[in-house]
Structure formats: structure tokens, C-alpha cells
Length: 263
Ligand SMILES: O=C(O)c1ccccc1NCC(=O)[C@H](O)[C@H](O)COP(=O)(O)O
Image (cartoon, rainbow, N blue to C red; front, top):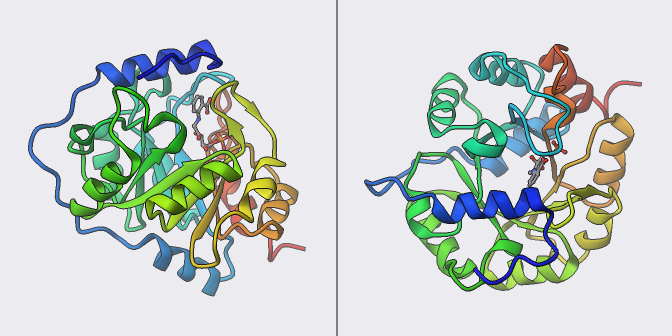
């Protein structure tokens, strides 16, 4: 990859580790649980479609959550999560492929693999229902192209969440053929969160794209703001995990999944 000028040191470190990480071995073949069906089921049940993230820690977290990730995942589903996201990045987020595998066995909702995939071989690490591809970190020297990775992921049976941060990146994702696009409110260059990001970028996506608002969402008011701006679903980590605390992740999830029904 070219120079990472302008990236926060933590992000440079994440990308350096991702470049060094190899792939799995055997080619993965997935019979994926449908993410859009899970969102529809949540809507039918009057739950806000939330992807709750099992994220033991992160460069911006206030501490670590050391409870059993499988129990956390099960409690998130009890709280109404339509889907789960599991960090598999080990060095900065405390994740692992093994955790994802165990979570996916323990729950029946779709599971997103959250990692920094730069090369096709890195898709062959673990079966998940959805994989993440981040526009900003692809199409650079030393990484595979977004289009090629999207096709390689679909060939293996994965659904693909393509992550953007600006309207231009949403357009890039659409041009590459993405049908599920996340707009990250966290600027991955500087690690700053601005909830104005999703509303500013969402209009660049056509109607037929499933749009997910990511990061920095913590309250029912934040849920309302993202939904009014066109979010079909929301990805929430820190506010549910309560890093450094020990609050009930089922209650934390329920507060957001019930945001449109509680008065
Ligand atoms: O969360 C971080 O600190 C972080 C740092 C560097 C790169 C990526 C990072 N997060 C990835 C994510 O997109 C979030 O885990 C996800 O959207 C949930 O965000 P939040 O609800 O704010 O925990």
C-alpha cells in the first residue's frame, strides 16, 4: 500500500498488522444467513434493526470487556439484535476467528466478520455470513481491488458490507457493485466520530441499496437521527459493550432496538 499519510498512528499500526497477516488455508464456502431478511424480521417485530458488535476493546475504547464473548453475543440477541458483528482483528481489538466461529454456532442471526481484509487470501480465515470491505483501505498499491475482492467474497458465499465514509466513497462502492453499504461516522483516518457523516453521505446511495449507519450511536436520539437520514440498520459496538464497565449488554441492546416503540 502507498503512504498512509494523514492516518492516525493507531490506524497505521492496524494496517501494518493487516498487511502482514496471511490468509487461512482452505477456501471458505459459506451458506450465509440473509442479512436483509434479518433486518426485515426485526422491522416486522417492531425492533430497530441493530447489528450489535462483539468488540472486546479498540484503540478508542475506555478499557476492555473481558466477559465470555459467547455469553455477550447471546445476551445481545436476547436484547433484540437483528445481527451480530464480531471483531476478528487480534492485535488492536482483542478479536479472533475462533470467537467468531463459536459465536456463529451459538446464535441463529447473521454474523458479520469485522476485520481489515486487504487480500483475497484473507477471506479464507473463517466462515461468516457477511464480510466487511473498507473502501478507503483498498485500491492502493499492495492491496486487491474492491471489485475483485467483492467478487471473490461473493464466490465464497459471503454477503459483503462495503464501508464508506464520504459521499464519494459511497459512489465508489455503488460503482463496484455493492448492495449493502455502511457509512462509518468514525473517520478512520483521524478516529474522530461525527454523527453528521451518515446524513451527509447517505443520499449518494440509490434506493435499492441497504444502508447501514455505523459508529458513535449511543442513544435513542442517535437512532432516530440515523433512521430519519435513511438508515435501514445501525451498527453499534461501544455503547452496547460498555468497555471498562459491567452493565448488562442485553439491556444496552434493548434500549436501542426498542427506541422506536418505547415512549
Ligand atoms: O472503534 C475504534 O476505535 C476503531 C479504531 C480504528 C479503526 C476502526 C475502529 N472501529 C471500527 C468500527 O467501525 C466500529 O467498531 C463499529 O462501527 C462500531 O462503532 P462504535 O459503536 O462507535 O463502537
